[in-house]
Structures are given as structure tokens and as C-alpha cells.
Length: 434
Image 1 (cartoon, rainbow, N blue to C red):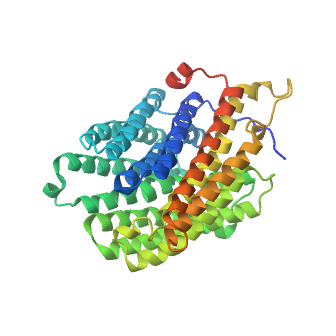
Image 2 (spheres, rainbow, N blue to C red):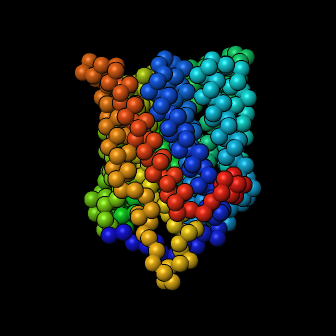
Image 3 (cartoon, one colour):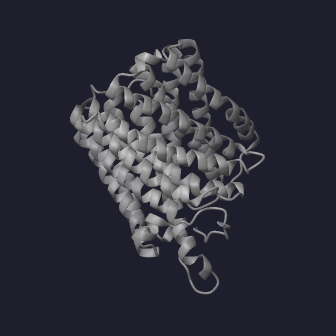
């Protein structure tokens, strides 16, 4: 059954309004991303919805979550609350500007939006780097987070180079091509910044939320993966940036095997869970399945060809499975706990023992969680099947899939917004200025 959380010392972290503001803005990007995928076609629409979905939703969620929980997990004080507040408007406006530039064809907007995005992400990276500097020795989660912070800087640097190139064709001067920088940028974003964060967090979250511990074999895998995965990502990025196939191939194999391993670890933790099944655990199960299924064709695809544009995300037509399937379900599941938990801590933690208080899982609507889970999962299943086997499912099926996913995203966002509105005590000014 659901339990009331134990007392948590959040004095090291920022006010909960700061991560909540990140999460609420990110929810808008989630809805915008899947809606854009449903109503647009062509290269511009695809690039826009990927930026809305990955940069706007997943990355803003990561910025908020790491800002809140790194100090709590590491037992150190956040370096600067002011920087944590400032990073959201800069990054949020920057990501919106990038998507708008691609959708409207106003490529001159890209450098301006790029500067804003770089400013927000670099403030986050500096703030987290200074915070992590006080945590020694690093555990596996902190090691992943430290590496991910570095990748956020690399990703935005490569993105800014492309934004300038769109406006001024500057890359040939540096001896690079737009195609190779784009490939390296996408690789560093997904497998460097995002997946490194996700893998590191899952070691904590999969055990915490299932109330289990890693077994001996899983701990050995953790030690190997913590060292091997960052090297694999670096090799994949460098190999693609400079067109060196053997380096990229070796890196891709390490990345795929690492992701497959973490999928097995998460599935095993869920199998041994000691708590009641929740929407969070359901989405973690879907994430483990998605990441595991993605890793197999990625391993094959990168072994054969690690440089082609068709295998940027591991293989032809597997991008939706990785991004909207595996990674998205990790974020969806985590938010189904984090948002109610933060609201619960603010609203009810000091009332425990004095009067009846709800459980964390009582704050959201179970039926709406079922609706968003079924709609989003069915929609992404249609998108993935239509992308992998276009002869079996016509193009309208993919559009319908994105429409279902958009419905699921709306229901998910509504459920979490209701938690904040009905149980929180936040004004707009509080969420904006913390």
C-alpha cells in the first residue's frame, strides 16, 4: 500500500517552487511537442518537434530535477538559488525560439534563440558543477550527473555552431560540415546529456521506488557501466563529428550494451518490488521494455554503420522508440512521483501526527492516470510500428498515433496541474520568482 514519505531534509536544496516551475513549463513543451508531431510534416516539423520534446520537455525537466535533488542526494548546499531561478526563463525562451525558427523558416532567429538557450543551460551547468564540487567521493549517480553536466555544455556549443551556420555558413571555415556537426550534436544531446542523466538517476530511483537493493551482479555491472558508458558516448560523438567510423562503431556498441544492461537492471528491480504497483512503476516498466527493445537494433545498426544519418538514434526508424518510448516513460514515471511528493512536502509534511493527511499517491487522479497511460502508450506504439513497418501501417496511422499521444500528454499534464492547484499553495509570482 502507499505510505507517507519519511522525513526528508530539503534544506540543502532550493525552494520546491523552483523545480515545480521547471516541471510546469516542461509540461507545456510536452504537449506542444507531440501536438507539433501530429500536425506537421517534413524536415522543419520534425526538427521542431524533436527540439520541443527533447530540449523543451525532457531537458527542462532534468534542469529542474537535478537542481532540486542533487543537493539533497549529495548532502551539500546548492551553489546559487538565483542562478537556478534565472536558468529557466533563458533556457525556456531559447528552446521556444529554436522551435519557432524551424517551424516558420525564420533561420535568422536561430542565433538569437541559441544565445538564450546557451545562457540558460550554461548557468545550470555552472551551478551544478559548483554544487557537485562539494560532494566527495562520488557515487554512481553523482558520477553520471557530473559527466552529464559536461555534455550539456558540449551540446549547446555544437547547437550554437549550427545556429550560426544556418545564418552565416560558418562551419566550412572550421573544416567541419553541417551534417557532421548535426550528427554529433544529436548524439551528444541524447546519449550524452539526457541518457547519462537518466542512467545515473535510475540507479537511485529504481531502488528507492521499489524499496529494493541492487544485487551483486548488478553492482558489478554498475561499476563497469559507470566507467564504460561515458567513454562510449565520447567515442560515438567524436567519431561522428570527424567521420571516423571505427571509433564511432566502438562507441556505439558500448552505448547500446550499457543501455541494454540498465534496462535489465530496472526490470529486475521492478520484478522484486516490495511496494504496491503505481502509475510511476508502470511507466518504469514500459521504459525498461522500450530501452531494451531499442538497444538490440541499435547494437546491430551501429556495428554495421555508425556514421549514416539513418542510424543517428541507433537504427532506421528507431528514434521514436528511444525518445518518445524509453526516455519519455522514465520522465513520465518520475514526474508522477516527484511533483506530488514536492507538493506533499510543502503542504502536509508538518501536519503528520497532528491530523490526518493524504498519501503522496492520493494527490493525483488514478482514473486520469489510466487514461493518459493508455492513450500515450497506444499512440507511441502506433508511431513506432508505423515507422518500423510502414508497409503494415499507412501514414495516417502514424498521424493518429501522435494524436493519441497528444491526448495522453494533455491528460498527464492536467493530472499534475490538478495536484499543484488543489493541494499546493503557490501563486504565479511564487512559481516565477521562487
